[in-house]
Image 1: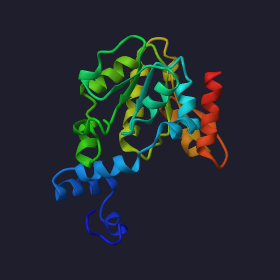
Image 2: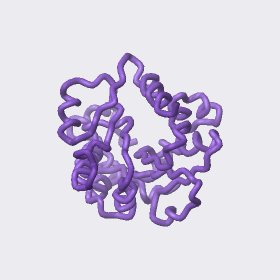
Image 3: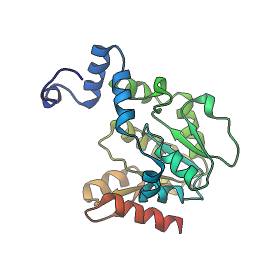
Image 4: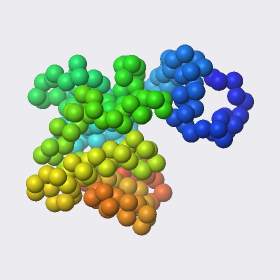
Length: 225
């Protein structure tokens, strides 16, 4: 889309977020990228039903709030196909919903609300201020609940910063067990991950093997049973 025959030439000059910022500058907006992603991430209901991971998430009937940084609608569709009412939330205007609805909070926006999508470097820096309606909702939702992170690592600066925020918030609460209300499902962890997450009072739920998706699905299925 940017006219480079070898994408690695751009990677030599900047990271992914900077490249996306460059894309926005050159194209004027991110619409061409968003349209391409929509076409790339199409899936019919049969494919959603066949996804063991999405089925396992939908089966967590005691979980009424899901936060995701994905832009697609696979999770809310999986919930609907499982007979659960799903309410996608991308902005403050979406926060009025029925008590029976499962909230799917699109923390980085989604394809239906491109104006709220967090994609480029500037978007991430704005999000890291953690002072908008979605961030205030997150802080509120953490009260009285445990949080389980799935599919994240310290490679995402935005999420690493969120780990610190969760830890700081839980450590100030009474009866918070020094913050041990935050967990992360992590595949093939080493001492590196155990040390970093433990330092933030996030307990690792380890999975092992060559197939990360299958191993994560098994953990979720155990949680639902």
